[in-house]
Image (cartoon, rainbow, N blue to C red; front, side, top):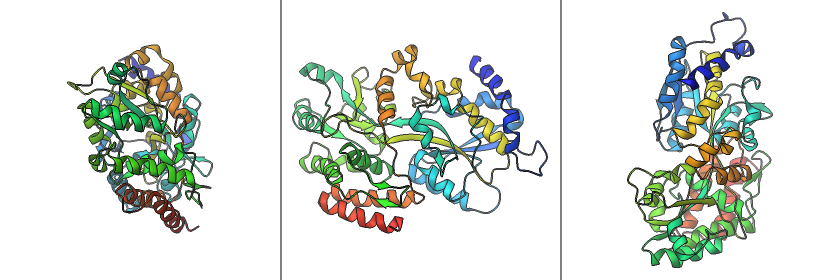
Length: 417
């Protein structure tokens, strides 16, 4: 296939650059050999097909995929357990959430990488920052993401309405228009897991607030913006234009509800805009940037980075595989086979891809304006605190103001500030 040949030619040029990546004192070929790549649930079934090209061209450096659970929390637990263990690593290459890079690097679980072999200057600028810690590159961006507002464009067109740009418009349509058409109004991912952290952060960021500053050393969440953002979500559940069922939804559950025609609006990642076979809303899905209080809001920057375990036995092969997966031909397949947003900027301006994935210009706009989740070497603890506190606000156990004050106290305890 053409993409295999092109990727193979590009990889030959990397050998000299990567020679220094093998530990000193070992035979020159000691850094090369078979690998295991660990990734969260491969919902789209594309990754093994993509790696078949590498394995065919490199029979002595084959990559086996180990598929971990769909849940980010469960994937983190399995990866961190392996990385803490003594002896040979079970996983060599790690497909990690963008927000784990700082924590994994600070813990010494992943290796710093040379910049030269990787096409960082071809990536969308915000994604590169997610792969660095303390000024060094510790991973390579592989997939990016930004939350979008998906909506039933057939219903809004029938009513002569543009998609909402503000929270007030979203709330009004969700409260009045959705019931008229037998639908629930709006939903996100509100089960207490990483998705709830993302939804809460987007609400706070969209209102102009922040959660942490100074690489996690300073707590900044106690603000009117945070109260406004969390209050917006809590009010939706209290008033009913966010269905109570959403308190138990992750990405897939919310996607299924939307694609089965149960929702007017949904906050989700762009993959949820690609209709499932037989979906009653096929051809009826629109996508716009998330709304905020007075105009477009702010998405959290999502996606994943590829990192090399500090205990990987074949680090040179690992780096070459990462270069292969972030090359143009494979990045194109990340989108066309996986329906996942690539990190290479030029693909967002490809007319053929835009015809197939009409949301690409909107997604590019959202990625460029997105904000990362708080960088912290204790990110797992930060996220658990956010989930627990925001959950209590959404279920009415605390007011938004009480929840924000508690959030500030508990984050200060986590960060030591």
